[in-house]
Amino acid sequence: MERYFTSGWHEDMRHRVREFAEREVRPRIAEMEASRAVAHGLSRLIARQGWIGVTIPKAYGGMGAGHLAKTIIIEELARVSGAMGAMVQASQLGVAKIIHFGSAQQKGTWLPRIAAGDCLPTIAVTEPESGGHVLGMGSTAVRDGDEYVLNGRKVFVGNSHVGDLHGVVVR
Image 1 (cartoon, rainbow, N blue to C red):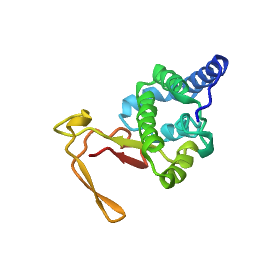
Image 2 (tube, rainbow, N blue to C red):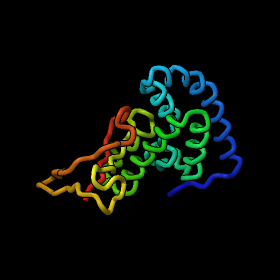
Image 3 (cartoon, rainbow, N blue to C red):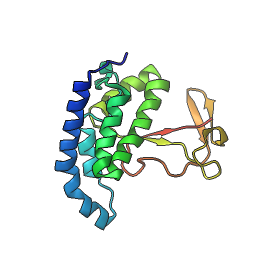
């Protein structure tokens, strides 16, 4: 169950993220843009703040703070760096799939690692023919014993360049 926080808590969170973004993200922007390199270390530093786990229930080590807190975190990071805001947003999409559709074993394995900042999830939805339109997806998953066999092709996988755990959306 999600815990509901007061507006004061949300404002404190906004202040903490804004301060972090100014101190840790802003000084790296020029180098990131000049090198056109992925900021792996910065992505990990953001994850270790616990912000990827903001919507993960406390029972799994997350903040259990809900979608408003998630939005504040993304907004404050994106205010300084669109790339870092997008990284958190893409990770949150991966988290949501585990929270809502993961088995008990998957939740127990992955959510604590994500909440601790040790694992960055991704989300693979976009396909060459249907784009991000999920009803037009052609990729499938067919059960084969205890496993699934995936068939299809994904493109533009959010966070694929920094991710550890890849969530693939299929039929």
